[in-house]
Length: 306
Image (cartoon, rainbow, N blue to C red; front, side, top):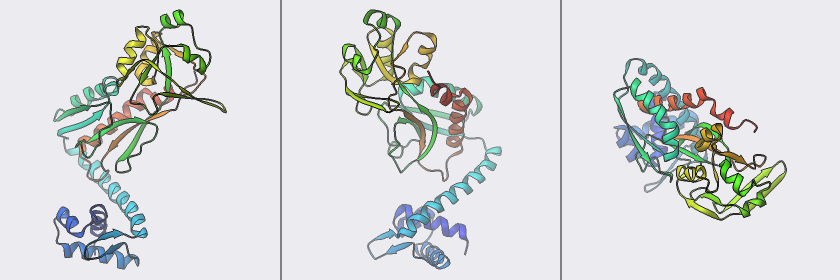
């Protein structure tokens, strides 16, 4: 029996947890799927699926084998698509989810170049500072910036590690003074992002020292670009991922505060539903985004010693 067909049938059963639903999605009969599954189990000499009249579940061996089988099918799919991409023009609508800050700073340059190169692809941006569920929102991919990616149902490709930094305008620091320790922040006006984890506290690390301090915002907001504007206007000290204010730091419009203390770092990831049968437009856009970060060496630049 064809091993590829066996793996395909098994992975679909593992994903659907139903022979009937697996058969429907594969366009096969239930008996055909069952034969593939039995053939695979007989060849391996191990039971992968527990079946009753009302319930289907994977055995521990089945769970482990399903992970490997998905990787095998994904690798084969990528190999086939890498060849087909040479002759097939990507087309259709690419639905992308991202925060406003990331979309303005990093997505738009990639989208501009991508749509020029692939004119048959249209881009639908879904902007939200809260994380959209990729599958429920019918997205092809999304950008997530967080400490840990907790969604195990998506595939993840890392773009960069991003420090969070404190910064203020030179005018603010001239008027209010420059904090010399985290404790000094209690006497300053803070600009706080309310969608970050534990936003009413700031956690600091320096060598073996760790501090977690309660904080109160002069201005609180759920958008980083608004807080950036407030910092540029001299209203207070903000805490943001460095990519939001990178250009302002380089130009001297903002100055880092307490640079010898580290805030918890974040990771920028591209997340997408599956590596199997990924449309050409999605795979090519992810590659373009990865290349954008690689070409500008953001990971190294943002994490270089101050």
